[in-house]
Amino acid sequence: MPLITAPVITPPDTGQPPGGTPVPLPEIGYATAQYTDPSGTVWPLTDTEAGWFTLAEGVSGLGAVTYDLTSDPQPRGGARLRHAQAQPRTIVWPLFVHGKDHLEFTARWRQLATAFTRTLRPDEGPGVLEIARPDGTRRQIRVYYQEGFEGQAKAGWGRDADSAVISLWCEDPYWTDPVPVGVHRETGTLSSFFNPFPTVSSSQVLGATTVVNPGDTTVWPAWVVTGPASLITFTHQGTGESFTLNPNAAAIGHGNLLAGQTVTISTDPPQVRYQDGSNWVGALNWPTATLWGLAPGDNAVSFTLAGAASGSAVDLSFNPRYETA
Image 1 (spheres, helix red, strand yellow):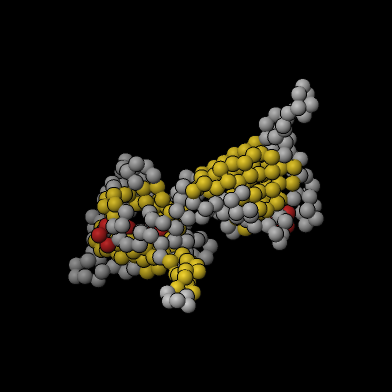
Image 2: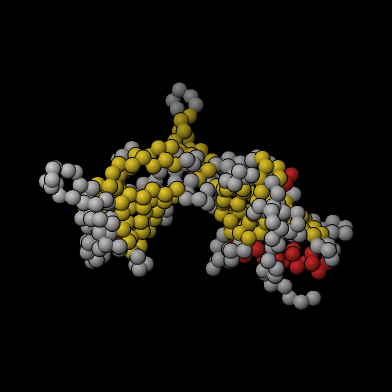
């Protein structure tokens, strides 16, 4: 038999929605599913025409996050909750694989096994499991293969069909919406304070903004600042937390951001990159800087730019996170 390397074949285009036809999945209802391996290859999981499909009755782990609770005993009895820590999630996903003969079955089995197990290669990283609803909304979670691609070892199985009960480990237990939420604020046309009458310029404060997080838990946004600007402060009005980006900081030695120059700030993990990829984490006002997140619901925030001019802008983006698929 020739050596099979993955991917061997491209999953077929059946003309159905991504993942196939909606099927009833435990804990979440009717949905389709697909898996994207670290190479970017997409594998439909609920498409019976693909050569494999999900055994929906055995699926588990799609519901609410499991929490580890830390509490303090109270002198009059009972306890008080001090902290709730979200725990990694394990998803169990049974797959039935078949072929018209032993060679086709074996090729598909090996191909799928490699698509999942390659998530454990240190140079590749996790795959993505996606659940899509009939209305087109989607939720995703990053997964690592844990165990289960062994087959059932039943009499007659392994010739042209077999099933695998795969366990997928998720270091972040929350599901994310692949469509990001974005907020854009840009300095308008500037005018003289006295010409022709006293006016308020937008060259300093881009304005107080209410950012709505539609998810179930805190998200950690990314920011892109576009010059010109000499000092940029980001403030969460609800918590009072803030951080300041100073392109003139001694650790950077850059000077004011010029028109069109950009800096990207990630809050989880903390990272600051200039447009050429250089590390600008030293431009933040440590140790008082707090790279704050956005709680579920409304968040009052403001962006203040010193040295702003026409074209100065701040862009915020995040992907909502959810308890369930």
